[in-house]
Image (cartoon, rainbow, N blue to C red; front, side):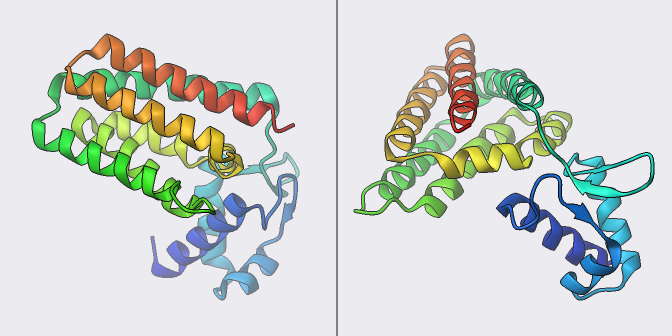
Length: 211
């Protein structure tokens, strides 16, 4: 894929994730090309990629729109995440090394630091949260699993759920990360999987209760 196509893809994905391009909004190639500062061909390539990743839907009439999600769609995304991340953390619990446990503790410290101020450092919390889940995938060492999960965790509903957390919910999330770390430290795959499943299920209800 060309640099121009990558540029258009990253720009459009970021705008969908932030809500600047809203669910249900029609997407026109010529307007998006101007927005991204590229020609229509890279935009077309980017839109095909975003359609494959479920950010965009195309109608029978070949018009494109930002994907809209029903609550049932969203619940399915979180259910798939529970299964896949549950499997990942099981593998990680069996393979984790002491130096990686140290990394988990450092990430948890960064999460706590993001919550320590008068105002929550939401961006810092989300960045550390992403590192936590990414480290689990790295330790699980399954490219197939990483590819499947990558498509799910980038979905707008997942991103928006995290952004909507209040301090209490973020503190609960940190507590769950600490528990998962303890389960990994004890090399207990059943415990780690149960904690991860509950962690993601709670995230779904946090999203559902926003509406």
